[in-house]
Image 1 (tube, one colour):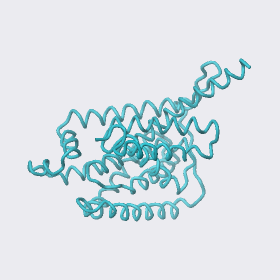
Image 2 (tube, one colour):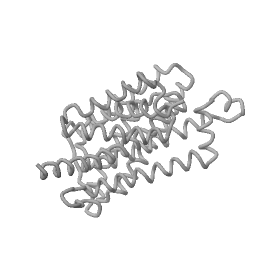
Image 3 (cartoon, one colour):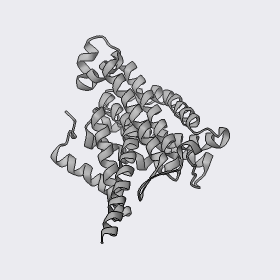
Image 4 (cartoon, helix red, strand yellow):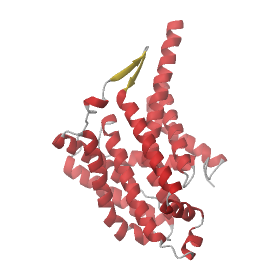
Length: 292
């Protein structure tokens, strides 16, 4: 009986660490989606396409140059560059328009990116392994923690700290915060908010690319990973609150832990429980936990 309890405790601790890792990664991917939603009132479904494309680019670059971290950074940079014409010729036309239009355009971009992925890489799932210096496992008694999980958590924490510093300690960040709270008043001050929208969109795409590259060793890379992550991003935005950085991080970890703990009992419904959590928050606090 004691042995079984110890095994259960070990499993819970492992799943807790997995949930925190997943949550930090989800939050990293969702923060760009949330900023686009909170600032420009754009539901950026194309975010999922950038995430998926970065995962495939990371897979290809790792095979070509053999350096994982460099491949992730190059992939995120390529994705952010590709997002520039999309923002200029498509997304920029939607600022100030009805939010439904952004859904239609976003789905269109996601469909095009997914089709290109299938054309270039095919339908067969791809996979890569973490580099030797961040692979292996850490043993704490009977608890096994992959070193790559620690790497992902630390990377996500550092990136979130940088985002927080930019938003709270720079002029552009203050303009972004003010625009989320009262866009009309910021416009009346003579500030070109549309330029801020463009910068925000490019940075959001870069963050989606980072998320796609970092997640590549953790998942089977296939064309459907984009639509899956956008649903999780949307649930995190709803739970945490529109435009809230801390809310995104908090909600990401809550969603990650929910998925991880549910997987102990029934892995097939783990993601569904995350959407149930979103529904509960919508019922009792529609603006999100940290939303205004």
